[in-house]
Length: 92
Image (cartoon, rainbow, N blue to C red):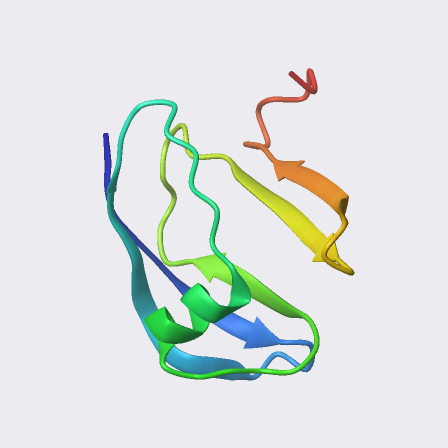
């Protein structure tokens, strides 16, 4: 399990949105997948925002993979990306 996953959300101009170093998960189990909406993230950080935002994790978490899914028009997901460790260049 990966404990105490924290991060800070930034707007497109690099300004902090809401509470910095907020706890997003108390713990994630092996191969656990969790999806967070803008509303649930707003509840965690105590603020809302218009437009795009970036989440920067407060620490390096071994074996944690982050994916970005954007839900558009209540129909499709697009702009899917997976951020891997720099040492993993295989794309797997």
